[in-house]
Length: 266
Image (cartoon, one colour):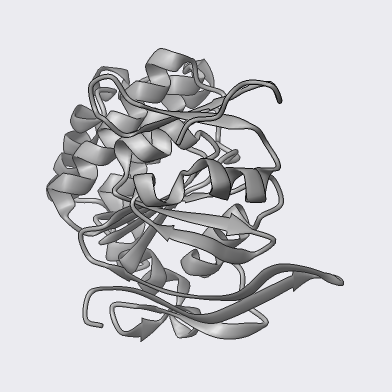
């Protein structure tokens, strides 16, 4: 494949615990994908393997026909941006300086940011609606503002692949909807690949066009939200009783946990 991602028989273990078990799949340019599954299914580990932060014990990751784990950190960052769940941030750094770090993969070691780099960073902050916070220290920003700042940095990298690990964690409902809308908007603008590891199945269905359901490190189901997020699949992987209803405006699946004696609906 020329533009996209190919995962070839990935395996990974922590000590004696198999976390990723034979994952093979292809992701085309233009796709926005949710990776879902119960705790311990391997969502975050898979994201880190794709990013090159973790090397699989077996298998390979190909991005734009390049083997990720043979690339330098700088060259990987030109291809892939990664927004972790709980990043360690320098609290006394201004947002604009933090976002400008996204230009580092495009600069030589002795090169400073130029006016075009600054314009790229400001455009990213305008898109994520935090440009008015450019001179604010990170330690003075709310959780929602920091998430937008992290997204701004990733956009400033201008990489065709964006990976996000639980981008809505620790956010209230309004900020969850806002950041998911912005992720979808930025994905449409760059037409690359966007992959989210996310625990909220309803948000996954509403904002992404493909869902990969993991269970015990394997792909249990892969397809559209309606194909994957079924009562049968979620009962088998989460061990939960759920009811699935159509979203009132989007028509995508809304997943609700229910008590055992509640009549399930597909």
